[in-house]
Image (cartoon, rainbow, N blue to C red; front, side):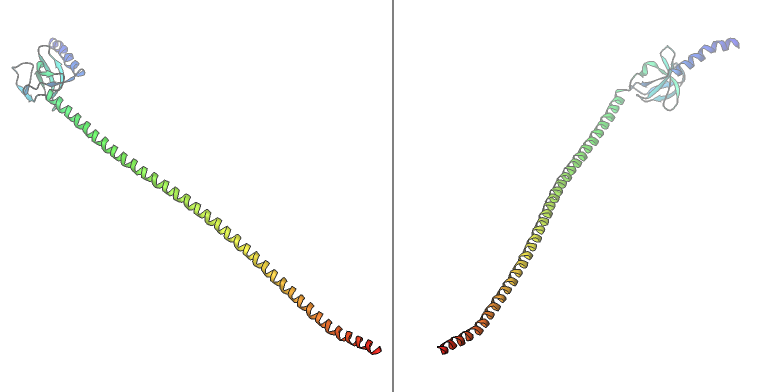
Amino acid sequence: MKRRLFWLLPWAFAAQAPFAQAETRYATDALPVPIQKGPSLEFRIAKMVPGGTPLEVLESDGKGYSRVRTPEGVVGWILSRYLMDQPIPRERVAQLEARVAGFENETRTLREDAKALNATRDSLNRCSADLAAVRKSASQTLAIEQDNREMQQAVTAAREQQRQFQLENESLRNQAARNWFLAGGGVALGGLLMGLLIPRLSWQRRRRWDQL
């Protein structure tokens, strides 16, 4: 019994070592590949895998067989010559087509983004033009308001000047009326004096003539 355990111990270490160094390889695309229960054609077939199936290599017996695990978890032995380091051409083509499709989607997305960016740029240009127009209109409005204020100030000054002219004209009219009143009074007084003096002078002359 101890001899049998001693004989199985190296196989146990040999079975554990490949698990730490497991790698993924691919079944050849020639035909569906059989996975057998043991490392010989004498063992039954555990599963037929299509070409290009990724297989996890668990160990190799050094005699042309490799112990593998399928994506479904089936463990068995396969001829090492049926294993490839890279996916089969059909799978690589599919991967390349997928990458090309991804690139096309990215290109389409970039084109859409560029179109949206151009639309945003056009909108920004229109907004800038509208802003310039608003600023110009605002400046014109401010200029008109300034002109209106200046015109209002000029009208106010003209009205004030007109009021001064009216006051001066009224003063001149009053002064002319006073002058005419004084002149009329002087004329009336002179006439009165003349009326009083002339008879007196006539009487004195008559008296003189009578004395002669």
